[in-house]
Length: 458
Ligand code: ADP
Image 1 (cartoon, protein in one colour):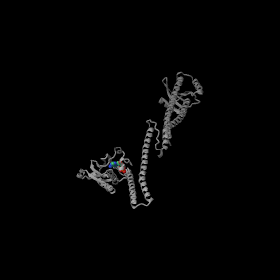
Image 2: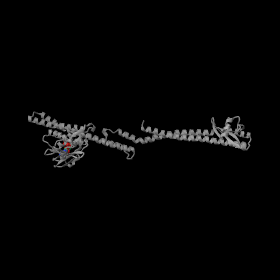
Image 3: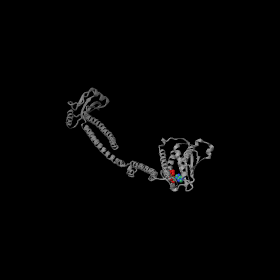
Image 4: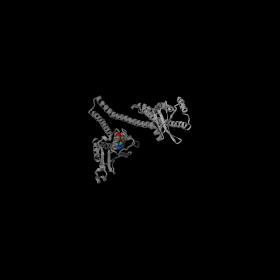
């Protein structure tokens, strides 16, 4: 069931319950009043007749005639007068005699002073009436035709008004809930049209401060984030395909040229060497992509364990120098550490494989962007952190490039100085952040660059 329908029904039910309670109170009060008023009328009639009979000594026959005459047009009250010994002194109509008085009833009235009760639908009262020092018992009874009719009319009116009101409330509820949910319907229609191909579509926001416009704003913000990350993914894939295509195209051209006609052994060797260089580039690229994928895993899926940073640095150096034997890499320890020999300081909770990839990138960059092919890392400690400074005396990074060098596939203005694919630093930053660390860079043109990495130690 739609919220709109549910709300309308709930609203109608609640209003119906309130109206019903209201109507019940009105009807019950009217019923009580009718009863009270009619007993009062009976009492008045009983006293008037007793007065006429006992006080004014009006003739019995005259009183009975008045009763019989009045009975034809209105609900005349039937009155009987007894003495306390149950002797009937006067009766309006002995032939009708609706109330069958008994000695017991007369005694009870005499004792109580006043009683009232229902006989079938007739209301009856009994009174003790004092006249000239003597007590008389007067009974009066009648059917409240007029009162019951009024009550019946009231009931019918209440029922009709109730039904019409509920119908009206239901229709009004439907109308207002439809009006209230119109923007939601609009939003649903708009959102249904948004797909990967038109992520630029946005929900309409009327600019007011209500909940729906808040929802539209939040939804639009989410779409902005999605669109950005979709664009980033697209850029990433096109960058990868470009990086793959360039060396592949070079390999194919090289091989096609060699196969086109007979070549000397030296030419073949040259072609194979060139193809090998490009193939190695491809291997490096695929390794970097693999590492990037690993570093992008959910941190809970990556194995972290206490890892000695000095050992990882030594392994990274070995890895870099294996591929580039000409690179010189020095590792300097903080003299304090050598004195303290506090082993825990050198431990971080980390993933050895990823940390090695990050450090190898920093070593490799330092060497490949310097004429002396040298990179130096110095290790120092603070209370909570290990601080690693990877410094080189290379060509430096142009200031405009500094803010972009951690972006995937970004290569600086100095890229022609050395081969690369632009993944290294973005991968390094991802790995350091994954280890709850930070990486920063300072560089000066033709003076060199220093990358500072801070990692929390155990
Ligand atoms: P790649 O080295 O493959 O080009 P990186 O992501 O490792 O990609 O580095 C991005 C860019 O940052 C490099 O192209 C280069 O312009 C600049 N860079 C990084 N490290 C250094 C460094 N030590 N000296 C000079 N430039 C550097």
